[in-house]
Image 1 (cartoon, rainbow, N blue to C red):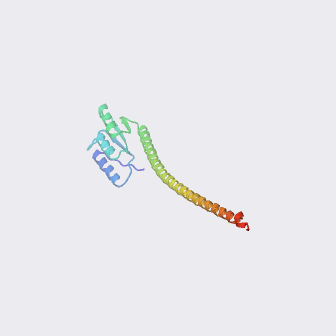
Image 2: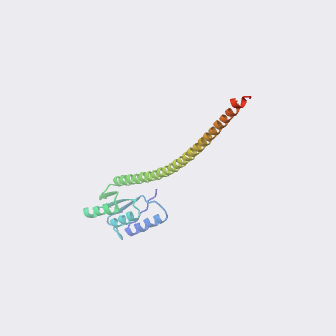
Image 3: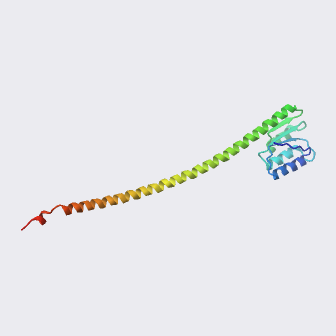
Length: 174
């Protein structure tokens, strides 16, 4: 896990775009509400628009409640931290956010694996169903053949019996 710092909002957005273009996952963005170049709320809103899974944290000592509420809504803030803050508190929030991000990614991966397993099982089930249908047809065909052979054997048996049984009219002498 790496971290990169930018003091200006526009530079932070450029860095974010570069990282995404280079196929890096950005787990967390921490922005101050007041940043030169691009305000933190706008930065987080833009980041959320192109990467909704990235967690956003905003710190500020100057944002009013309406601005914070708007940012929470538009940028889906993970946390808002008001200044002054203690470094250990910020570290704890960042660690919690990263753990949450990793847990969500793990759940997403497991969901994909589960969907793939379900798809494979469905395909196997369909193959088994088709094999059962084919087997049923074979059983019916063999049963029909056996019944036909039994009929032929009964007919032959009757003919043999008829042939071997002496008929009184044939056996009588004048």
